[in-house]
Image 1 (spheres, rainbow, N blue to C red):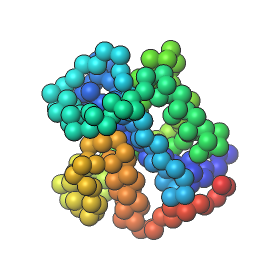
Image 2 (cartoon, one colour):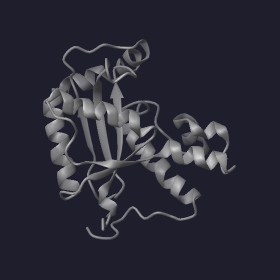
Image 3 (spheres, rainbow, N blue to C red):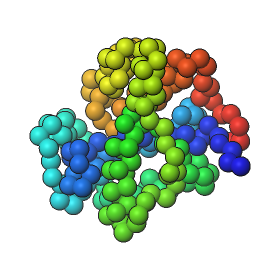
Image 4 (cartoon, helix red, strand yellow):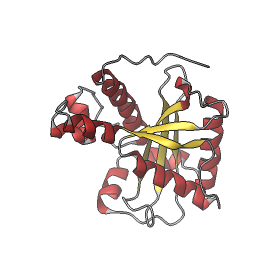
Length: 199
């Protein structure tokens, strides 16, 4: 029987050059553990031959100079991500949380593809999508339809995201962690972010 620990749950956000993982690439990725005592990780990634959508290029221009100082190759970023996940989850696979998390996971797996791998070591095949939970809550009449988008959800749950941090991997991952905790409260239970279970 699988026994989960709070430290196994990690919020993921990826910023990309567009919305299609076949032709677009990740340019930054952030991991924010649900457990408050664990460190975050934010990586800038330099794809080999990026193809940009107009929206992604405009968003990227806001943090291009900072990104340029620390951008890693996809292989270097993958190594750091896998080492990080191995440390914080102590060898277990991380349960990833995200808003439309399939999008982020598809681009994360593209890092593995660049290194000749099928997947990222340390990531479980199980994940949690905050949008799916919000959609169920909307169907049950618990929240308004406007709260289904990330911006709408942040407004509805009164999560303040500094404008300079919005649509950055780390800023959005931190906000999504707060959103996930508020969703759990909506479901009827305050969720501890200090260690529970095996640590």
